[in-house]
Amino acid sequence: MRVRFLGVRGSTPAPGAEFVRVGGNTSCVAVAREREAPTFVLDAGTGLRRLARELGGAPFRGTILLTHLHWDHVQGLPFFDAGDRDDARVELVLPGQGSGEDGSAEAALARGMSPPHFPIGPDGLRGTWRFRSIEPGEHSFEGFSVLAAEVPHKGGRTFGYRVSDGNGSFAYVPDHEPTVEGPGPDGFGARHEAVLELSKGVDVLVHGAQYTLDERARAVAFGHATVDYALALARDAEVGRLVLFHHEPGRTDDEVEAMASTSTSEGLPVQAAVEGLEVEV
Ligand SMILES: [Zn+2]
Ligand SMILES: [Zn+2]
Image (tube, rainbow, N blue to C red):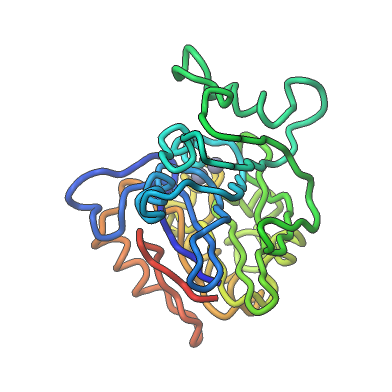
């Protein structure tokens, strides 16, 4: 399968000349089978807008799976031209938000996307949209097998995912604060059961790397991991390759590139996600 990075920032977009090589859009990753258009999208940050251009005028027909509902993972939704048109057909899936009417997937999304915060609610999107929530466990979306597990993060239920197509697999864990469950063997954060289950032996691990070790206090305050944690996890989970993701919005191209080039670990291939990067899995 092809894994295409459309938005690689965390927290908020990063426009400006210092950010053009890495890209300034927030989290969005499109997944496609060989030579087919993407039908499966992880997160709907501002990077989702890029997918409309890449579909070359065709409508989007597929599934968008969210890790959680923070702004940097949903703000692309109402600006996704390929999804907001009469011939689009989209299933939007998110972590379960509890029982009751307010806990429905559409109601949960509408709390952040409806007047007065935004001119329209989810029901204002054109085309056929379905909204539903899932619980941890095995799922299937667009022919891909997806394992969902809850991971610690700050402010809202958050899932990480392991995606496989029968040939290759990758784990997607953009927002994760591992020290919630203890310091782990090296102080970088616990390698807890859920994240190990998602990551164990995958070909590619896409993991949040928003902060450096020097910025550890900020990582804990904002509910994220450090680069050092991502490296340690990748090693312990014996993954094939690590892609550093969800970059700090203030980190310039030069700084992201320097971070990636110094993030080495015993032969493990490591790279920083940039907009437009495509990884064959
Ligand atoms: Zn985020
Ligand atoms: Zn978040």
